[in-house]
Amino acid sequence: MTQTGIRLAVSTVIFSLRRHGGDTRPTVVLPLVRRTRDPHEGRWALPGGWLGAEENLEVAASRTLRETTDLSPSYLEQLYAFGDADRSPSRVVSIVYWALVREDISRTASPHNVAWFDATALPRLAFDHNQIVEYALWRLRNKVGYSRIAHGLLDDEFSLAELREVYEAILDRRLDPANFRRQVENSGTLIPTEAFRTGSHRPARLYRYNHDVELADRGPLPHRVFLKEPS
Amino acid sequence: MTQTGIRLAVSTVIFSLRRHGGDTRPTVVLPLVRRTRDPHEGRWALPGGWLGAEENLEVAASRTLRETTDLSPSYLEQLYAFGDADRSPSRVVSIVYWALVREDISRTASPHNVAWFDATALPRLAFDHNQIVEYALWRLRNKVGYSRIAHGLLDDEFSLAELREVYEAILDRRLDPANFRRQVENSGTLIPTEAFRTGSHRPARLYRYNHDVELADRGPLPHRVFLKEPS
DNA sequence: GCAAAAGTGTTTAGATTACACCCATGG
DNA sequence: CCATGGGTGTAATCTAAACACTTTTGC
View (cartoon, each protein chain N blue to C red):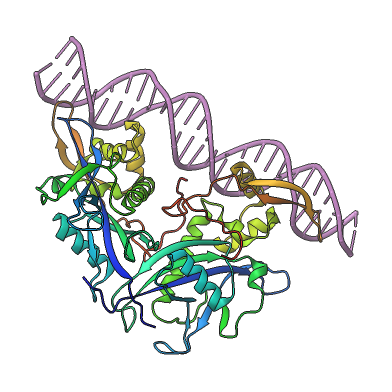
């Protein structure tokens, strides 16, 4: 009944946003860690680590994420368990999470073995991590359509244009500002504040997320009714 | 670097349909296995077993499912990894799959420590298996709305009424036959045959699933969802 | 013929889309 | 005043839902 040789790792695909030029549109970026030992020494890999003997999975994801990248996520959800026998020289089953980090937090200095990459232009990563990131990106794009996870990439207060930019960065297409406004207004997830984002043109009202509204699917516990997902 | 005391199990929530009375509507049922040893001796539990040292996760799910219930699924998908430290007296992380089994196959004699239960009226199960079944049911209900998994509970050829009954059993509400017909016809997933289901009233045309159409969300890897024969 | 399910047609309400247009600000 | 993004209005289109109606069988 003893099980030998199978080790359990927990890794996380962390998404954030980054504006590369001066005031260009944001793009989806993620932090990777350069491996300092075999296998795949020198390659970039997802942040992660071994599951502690008495540690819950989600706690392990938070811990390894913090230890390797020094980040704390605003959203964390299990993605998938990857366990093919040949995905690593030794037998490793990885429980992979995915997370969102606000742009300002992801801008703090990273450990020097950590670097941020554009999510759509990754080098060849260690193990099966390219596939894992692809799946996480698919889930992110999928989920932004029927939940309010986009808020996990923004500050407490934000303008509708800023929220729309998050959607546009994730979905990689432009959205009609007028229709976008109505959609989110009708969703009841936003509370208007009295503050405005002042800048080069007409000030934009700032909104705050309505925390009374139920959060979407953080795993097996919540109960939603009947939603649609694109295929 | 060694990891001690954490064992990896693979379990599966298996759904099928059962007509209880003479020609009543089908309900969703699932097979459970009575535990013959501690912990939770005597309680009903999900079929499963330990992950083999060189065994892929999906293969382990198929194998343990076959070994404990003698069933072969028409659909198999990873559900979630449950790993809370206190979910079992010893540390066990369970990779849970969920599966569909056609009604005729589920009617074959089960091993005598296996029994079928109505999915909505379960006794208190071993470990956290009640929660797991709840989540699998939620996923099934969710997924039936945007994919064609319902076909996994039917024979090769079926009438629209039979397909609708599957939806109604899963969603636990009646659907308008006229609108249901149009929806599935427009989805392009059905191929009409020249056969008819003859019975007490006007014969109903039989349809076949269009295997050219891609199914939604089958997990991260480019693998097929509908399994052919027992693996 | 009658009952009941198979199958078609139509109407309505709501959501999505496209886009015209006004508003408010910095410069 | 002008350029630009903020914000509103509206018509066309698409979809889901409700339900009346016709068709075809067993009895």
